[in-house]
Image: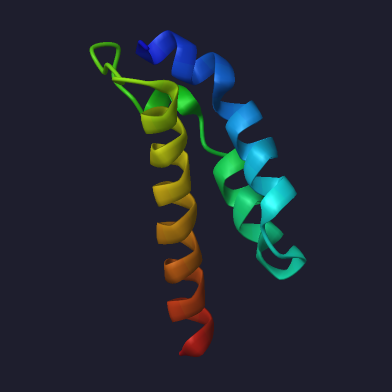
Amino acid sequence: MDSINFIANYNQYLDELSDVIREEHKHVLQVLRNKDPHDIVTPERWFSSEIEARGLVWVMFLNQLKKTKTISAK
């Protein structure tokens, strides 16, 4: 899967996340929705599978959630 497919599917991956996360974490998705997927991957980026592409979005979600919790804990 190339970066163009990732960019095209980025919002779908976020929608899938929205279906399985708790309501109190959905604000993190809004942060990710505001990111331009063109800024996330380079044109040369290649994913071995769609699962790997979804994994990148999950990792971004978890990192943003961790960052948000760290900020709110201060």
